[in-house]
Image (cartoon, rainbow, N blue to C red; front, side):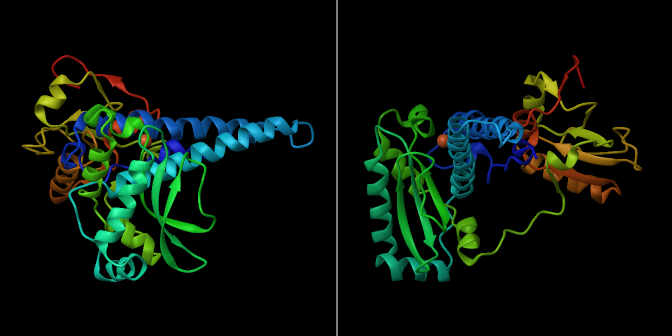
Length: 307
Ligand SMILES: [Fe+2]
């Protein structure tokens, strides 16, 4: 299995995170998160090829250690990005647990921030977990990707590697920690705390689902973004998201359609919804062309004046 084919999309458009530049979020997602997943894929392939009878212990040790680091980096980055967004407070049940285990939200916030600042100048993660032995919430400090409470469920993960903030905050890690804490969307954390999965969007397509796709890709990036782009998904048909008229664009009604934009948010979702309303079988690509490219998906060159 390729983990790259299942890259998790960002929780919100990269320009919509209060306190963070689009450039930082996009770089963090495409280079560091997707980079960890690429490493995990490569390590997994090496491990799968090992012969247990003849491979020396030092090879097992090295690869299993690297697998652990890359795997946790993937998981923690996904949790980091899930929580980053326009702030949404914790729901009442999780809020009550925070008060039970830390005294108050502000007391939790102060302790979490202190752990983040303690990692400034170095690297690592601060993770809010539900520790399953006691069922209580706990703040876990990790100096790398591989240190974790056994059996704890991570709810929030603050990335303290410099790549997560240096572009916007320089060496001011404390300001970064405050910005991150002020922009927490607790929705996914609450779902994990309750042990429930976030409901899947029935109109979203993942890169993994599109292996062997024989339908039609529709490029619905915003006009100026499309004009500046140099590549498109294979065989893509251009549809301006401002005027998504499938028939005028010559889209056949008997083919499956997957609409994409840059990251998989409003332009592709709204265009796919408009096409469904016109009678098309249309979904949107959940992580956009960024996720497709990061997953190693094939791209075509954009032809002058169109696709
Ligand atoms: Fe990171």
